[in-house]
Image (cartoon, rainbow, N blue to C red; front, side, top):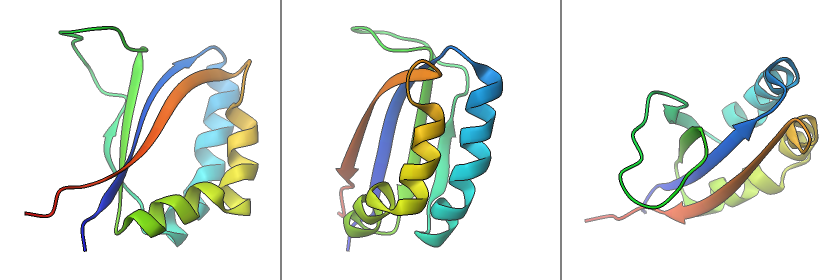
Length: 98
């Protein structure tokens, strides 16, 4: 079964409030087996446009990735980072299992 990923591009307007979101998302991420692959490190945009922060989170399956996003725990955390704290794009994508 292929893994799945959340791929997010985010602009953070209120870093202190965003830190509260990061603390609150730890429990649902642990519950659904999430693992950070990229967490806002240095980046170079070579084509197109993006936001300042890129995050990639790995899940054991597409079902786990979707269930985490839809969970009460994550939705409560997400409410802490919604605009005006941050704006972003998030895609849940199934990985390639060669």
